[in-house]
Image (cartoon, rainbow, N blue to C red; front, side, top):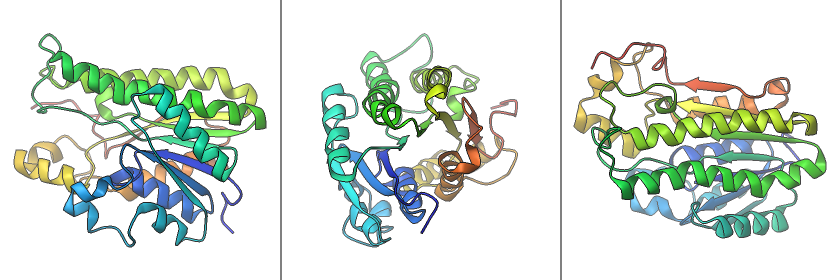
Length: 271
C-alpha cells in the first residue's frame, strides 16, 4: 500500500509529457487516477512521446500499477466540458481529493508576442488554456474536497510567470502563468479552513521530447546559460515536487510557489 492508497487523484493534460509522469507517480503512490485531456491518445501526434508508453494508453499504464483509472476527453477551455468530465471521473472513481491542473501550454514563436505587439488570437487561446482551464478545473473539483474537508490542489505555472523575458517576448504565456500563481494564493487563503492545501509548481526548461527538439533548434546553450544547475530538468524532477505537495509531507504548506527550474528565476537574464 502506498501513502495515497484510497484517494482519488485527477490530472489534466495527462496523456503525454509531464502530465503523464504526474499521473503515473500518483498511481505508484496508490491513488486511483482520473485523466482529462482533449484527446486521450494525444501522444500519437509525437513519436518521441509514443515511444515512452509501455501500454496502449496512459490509462492502461496506470492500471498496470494496480490501481483504478478513468479517462474523459474535454477541451479545458470549455467550462461545461470540464465540469462534465470531472463529474464522469468522480462517478467512476469516487470523490476527488487530489488535483493537478497540468493542462496548458504556450503558442507561437518564443521571440514573438511582445507586451505591446500581441497576436490577439494567440493571446486569447493561451489565456484560456492556462488560466481559464485551471480555474474551471479547480471550481469543478473543490466541492468534493470541501464536503470531505480534505484536499490537495497543485496548479502548474512556469518560471515565465515569475520573471519577464528581457525583451518582453512571450508575454501572453507569462501573463497566464502569473495569473495562475496569484489564483493559487487566493485558493490557499480561502480553503485552509477546509483542510485543503493549494500550492503551485513553476517548472523551468524541461527535457520532454518535443521541448528538447525546440531547445536543440534554438541552441541548447542559450537555455542552459540561464540556469544555475547546468542541465535541463526532467519529468521526474517535477514529479518529485508533485509528490511532496500531495502527500502528508506538505500538510503545513499552502500558498507556496515551488520553482522547479535549476535556478532560472534567481538569475539575471543577460540574453
